[in-house]
Image 1 (cartoon, rainbow, N blue to C red):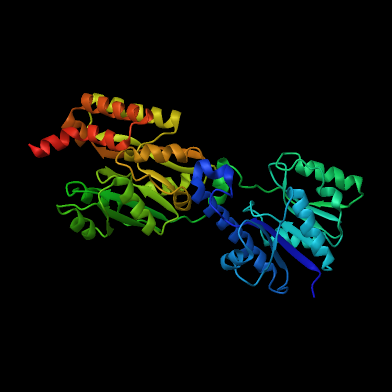
Image 2: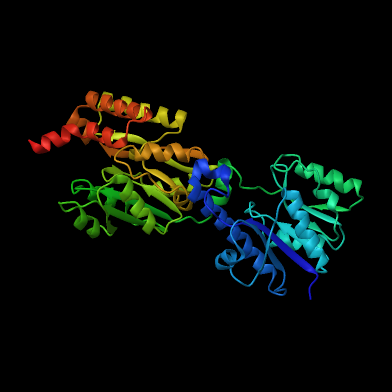
Length: 435
């Protein structure tokens, strides 16, 4: 029987009880989904170490029951309740009980560090051959891994858990006890919204373009033909019940067409739920993308701090007043990180789903979404413009349209329900249709 043991500390993913510092950005369900995914990520690399040692892994948990944990992660592991006490008391208990079962090299890890891999786990066991204590320091001053070859209760006592002094305090106690220590490389935890890009970082990202439509036969062909065939991607048109030839044209252009009730936020969510891409690009049906849009997006997303972004805006046919609007859009996006939907918003797919997608509201779904997104990370601004139709400005009159947009935005910030704002915004159009 092997003398090694790998202990994973986690918690049952009950919404509202896990990743609480991420709830403002992801919501309770999203934070719980992230916790679940990070636990499963940790378990995957841990299992790769257990191929020659089936008894290697123990899972120590809080929340839920042993049966619930087995149904989630599988019955092949040994499960133990962490018990009462602060983090130090609970870790000490796990080490003590494992040593009592005649284990000689014990490594304990949490699930908050996506950079932690089987390589680090193996390195910790190797280091325990010649060191009493192994630590995997975290960038926040704590540690994401600790290994011992004999029980030393003092290194868990009177530590200011959850602060940036945890690693330093642990080293001080180890020095006082005469322990030989091996520090692994510093890794990064995911604890707060600003850390989320680390989890979302991927390579070779595929792109799904999602276009909500409703009676767009005059614009959809140009939009789709300009997109062409995406390298490593797809185009999804989500139609809200068009009475014209929108669906037929979209199918002729090779897009995948879905049906949904008419609600821009709901339509975009429906498209995202069917999308296979790592990145999602939400495009209005009357908006044309630049020729190299996919490479521009992928390049923007190589910045690990970037979680999404948008393009500059060009309105055609142009007028001096519309040029003013374009400059105002650039200023607003750069200064306030607040692009609107007509700027072709893009975002990482997994993050979009963790956030719960767009709010299914009658108006301002783009503003509501971006305000949540910018709390998580950087919003990239690509200075190359998308070209959108000036039809609304022509129909309403540019000065009136500008005033109406500002009134609606003001109303939204004053917490007027989006349904009432939509009644005001579309009132003129509805009156014209009745007439």
